[in-house]
Length: 570
Image 1: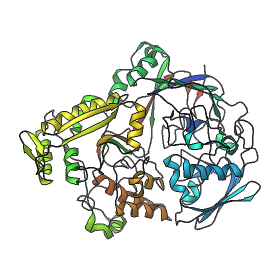
Image 2 (image 1 turned 135 degrees about the vertical axis):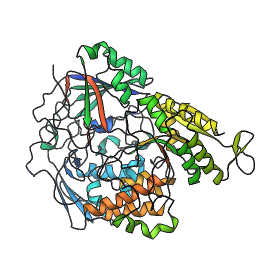
Image 3 (image 1 turned 180 degrees about the vertical axis):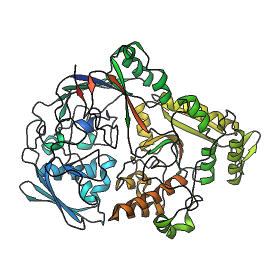
Image 4 (image 1 turned 90 degrees about the vertical axis):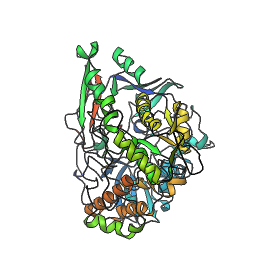
């Protein structure tokens, strides 16, 4: 995106890969809930989330040790102009789908058009910014953009390539569970039992095994993903040896519950992975499309009523720090206090319409750490009164006497979210608010959040060290009314849109960082989410046979680190 890539043209392997990693072994991973689709590229269905990282490839790939840089994967070379108004890719002649057929320009063009018009919402925005897409040589395909957006030359290399011939005469958007997309990735789905288990087998004829970008990756012969009712059952299966590895997100559980026999004997190993990536946002998101969440004072009151210090101490032993902004824990995070320098300049044109705290500085309210949190609840009630809600017969009600009631939508498999909601609703009940918890299965949760059918719900949005075009998808104004986008809060803010546009038009890292910090202020002071704690360290418990390289990427753990860069060794 800026300057030169970190790795030279003749690099042998990615720095965080073991180029000599042995191939072989089988592992079993675990998901909660169930699945009714094996096509992660359409809106319909609930899919094992790992599939799109294992079975399909894009024209370019990301180096997890370097933000804002991509390298050739299906493409052997990339050309673009100085303004990044177009980009041309040349396909590798050896690139093959898992059935042995070559990856062609025709497949590329069909994939982009199909995903952009019929695919999952995450693929839609790019298609609207492509002016034309045409074959310019036997293995060359050229994208011309209709938007001044320097990142598009990179984003154009990051869409999965599917096989056109597989879908001739079929309705792609209505694919059934038996319509498993053919990809060019290292793994193929070799077996599955609907809602219960999926098995992926490493393709022995995988075309990319020896190219530098893939050397030392995808080393397990077989990966099975089993599905369980909830996280507690997964943990019991792991303790029994039925699951090979699990990610642990609770520091207190990590410290106190991994003393079972297999761990004591050394059959299970605890690995911690540090990282430098932003915290992202995790918490209960409020749907501002609905009253009273369209009033920032109500949102601030509900954040104030959340007794973070007590809840964090109760559920994690106070070991995990709170998320303080969407980019906290990174160099992209907003600075405390008033906006200064370039950040202030970028926000100044919108000053008359900004919420309190954007320019002056905003910090999350703190509780006193006690169960009752009286001072915090008094502040919350004062904010509610300012917004027109008063206590009437023991209940908070509006001027017409209508009591305040709302529902928190939760996935029943996520037991920790339920525990947080239980403690939170105790405080809200003290304020006179009636709160119900709606527990649904994973498929219903996915469908309802995609349709924005909730008052408040759990939301997790990871953030990158190289934020860009995806930010429009996360909280851009257009995404607020487009079902299936992650803009669950319904943010519609011209200032947010402008900061994303500035980020994308930036020609220097400094300008991009300033725009990101300004965006962070707008999102955090927007008071859209009741934030939980952040995960500054990744935690994976795994069988001792599972190994990983000593060199860790700056992004730490992620779906494209374990199992991609790990291997099996007796």
